[in-house]
Image 1 (tube, helix red, strand yellow):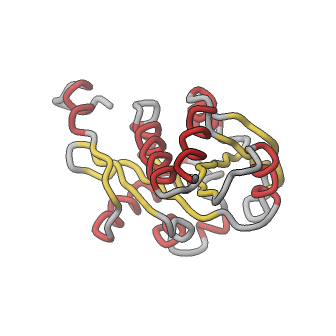
Image 2: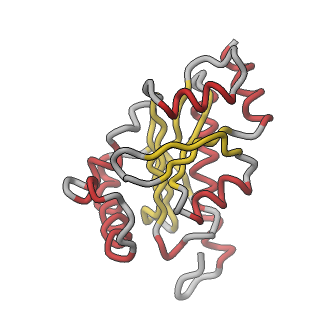
Length: 191
């Protein structure tokens, strides 16, 4: 997280995760466009054909947050209700039978120059906490070829419980459930 003229420690102190507002969209667009130029596989082709900022927020109807570093937008995460389908079935089969509503952590995006600096983890923690506080069981998915995202989730104790082919992306999509302590916290909150 080092930039010219500042130390990593001082930048960590200024990392803020807060609810998204429309004023964050220009910063998010900057991140999305830079990532799209650098990585032909992300976002998926169908997202590139439209408004990238609208695509980013489309599913996140339960909540959205941004990460700010020294006042600049550097990341985004959302949580969304889980629709019926293969992923829902994979998550339900792996979670306790008494699990209620599911909320998917979605659209996790971090400025590519600041990856591996803890921003994704901070955003994910915020989304998980918000899901549990809202009475939802947090779940996530990751494209199998997105090594950094998947490694971050697995390192935090998330488990892969199955996979399917992502219809729009045309690639393998892995279903992830949280560590047991988060499952227990969500079940306690749902009761």
